[in-house]
Amino acid sequence: MNIVVVGAHQDDMEVNCSGTLLKYRQKGDVNITIVVISNGDKGFQHKPSVPYEEATRIRNAEATRVADALGGRYICLGQPDEYMQDTPEARNQVVDILREAKADVVFTLPPQDYNADHMVASEITFQAVMLAPVTTIFTDHEPLKMTPVMYYMDSAVATGFEPSHYVDITDVWEQKCDLLRMHVSQMDNAKFFGDLDLVELSQIVGAYRGMQSRVKYAECFRPAPWPRARAGNVLP
Ligand SMILES: [Zn+2]
Image (cartoon, rainbow, N blue to C red; front, side, top):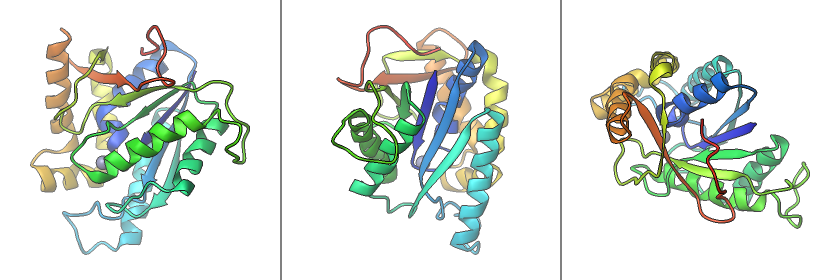
């Protein structure tokens, strides 16, 4: 199964989808592609003296380490952090990645979230998934035979997101925490910005979603509408 996750920032996937990727990996043969649309250069609020270029370098290195640990690959599209835009170029970049990866399943951020970049990433992905099989959209790779299945992942702190599907991540919880800690800079940045580091935040959200689904820790999702939805459940 070919899985593509599209986020806005270098730690978005890790907070609300990395447990699910670990479960897919546990179940068998998967190819994982992690796409981040922004360059992450505003993510050093705890150390504002760090130049933007250096922030981007560090955050891409952290995200690459996580992708390596998941046996996947990491692609950064390099848009300006906090000023991301849905452009024809951005849509086609994601279309081409979906085609090259032969995506079966795509995860992205929810349409409503605390950060406009998250909503822009969601919108770009929503359109790119629908366009990936369209034969009149030309990119470097051949159109897909079928629209990939698409799921929205949870909002950053579970605000305003109504899930329909839950994945039990209890047995990979410690591994998920290890992935989150690989974002060394963002552990500190999250604490500075929102009083909780990435593990503390994910622990609260994971336990809350776990409570709703009668397990210790869960991640949750909602399918995107036709033609992106499919009968049955492809989640692990
Ligand atoms: Zn983000």
